[in-house]
Length: 125
Image 1 (cartoon, rainbow, N blue to C red):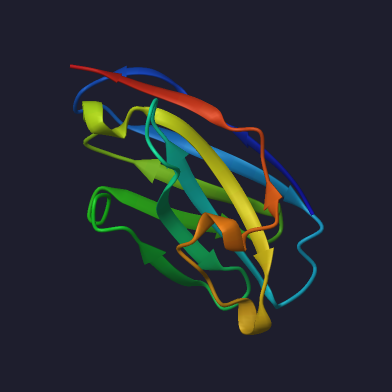
Image 2 (image 1 turned 45 degrees about the horizontal axis):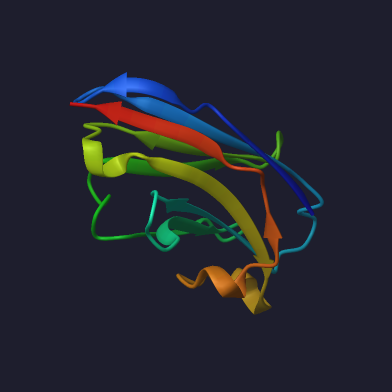
């Protein structure tokens, strides 16, 4: 599995941004794909995840209601629509994938074996 994240940038508080994660190799029904983020000086944090073929989605409490995760199975691309951004959303965002029975998602970064390169999101207040 190879992952390529894109779409980051500098925005103002209240703005929206959409991240993309182009994935190759997601041929199994047992894959889950997730977004994590890491702010300077902080640990990597779970943002959202999806069971790739079952389309079951989970969000962290900090982004629920503001972020929307979706995927295009034809393009093998994962999207993270981020609305109502604030300064606490500033971080490097990573997409990650894991193989798990039935595509079970995890909120733990150490349970994902495939990672993209990260894309910077900066929200100015």
